[in-house]
Length: 219
Image 1 (cartoon, one colour):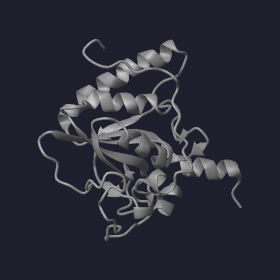
Image 2 (image 1 turned 30 degrees about the vertical axis):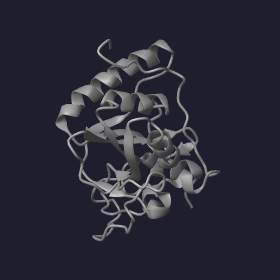
Image 3 (image 1 turned 120 degrees about the vertical axis):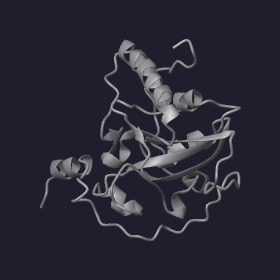
């Protein structure tokens, strides 16, 4: 029987594509409608909208923080960065799909910039923790940013560099956030969507470092 340490190490290691769970060809069934503002999150974006996929630990609290951010039109939760097609929550939590728990953020660029969304991201979790976030341990809790547009990558890298400086000045370590172009985003099960709206007393592990992230041309 594996020890607790062995189990933690297994959950914290991203499997190879060959070793990942096989998954399924059929997507999970969801309504596609946000439970708080009734906006569709399965949508075609219009020219004033942009999208970014963010992972900052357990996606329940992260989604609530982001849907309450002025300028954010709609959010959903799901899985990205792994190999298993159409994974379930239980499969992702096993550590054998390679996915991170993430929030899809669709925002109005006339109200909030990508830098503004990233400020919320950096300040509301600890991006230096590797394969965990606080007491939540496993590769699914790792800090990630997946972009859907090549033009966003320089903005993301500049934001990371600015926040890294602030973290080091405050005595924190190096950022471990995974920053990649989005491959595939899989919607999570319906009961996870806007979970803390449906379950107000549910678990929320979101917590930042207390370090403020600079924003704008001044950085």
